[in-house]
Length: 151
Image 1 (cartoon, rainbow, N blue to C red):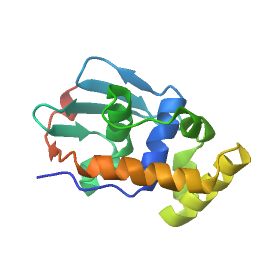
Image 2 (cartoon, rainbow, N blue to C red; image 1 turned 180 degrees about the horizontal axis):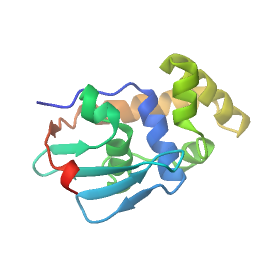
Image 3 (cartoon, rainbow, N blue to C red; image 1 turned 90 degrees about the vertical axis):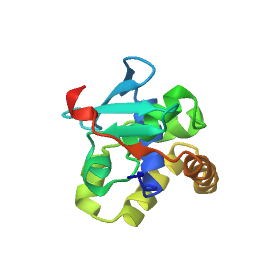
Image 4 (cartoon, helix red, strand yellow; image 1 turned 45 degrees about the vertical axis):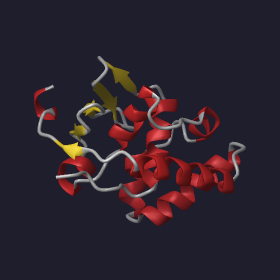
């Protein structure tokens, strides 16, 4: 089974995770990603040669899409373009709190863009960046594998 494309907000969440320094590269294929609240650690496996991946985050595990831990790992690998300025504008956001209180990705995205705007990054720049990353991510078809629970 191929992983589906994620909600676009996950690209912003991944950029924020990189800016926060919450991604630890263990080797060329294995990563640990700490949640925004710091209470969870996700195992991530990405093998670009075999075009396969997995992650223990809910989006990847239960909804079968490319979750933000995989996207952030692809940023670290240089497979997807990472914009440090945009990442910095998305740093230190409590994503889980926003997702749980707003319960709607469109509302979360609106709030996150307000935060980024207050930190000096225009919403239009974020939209352009997200579309660029999304286009690149579409080109990377990843099969879901069951390796992450053992990492």
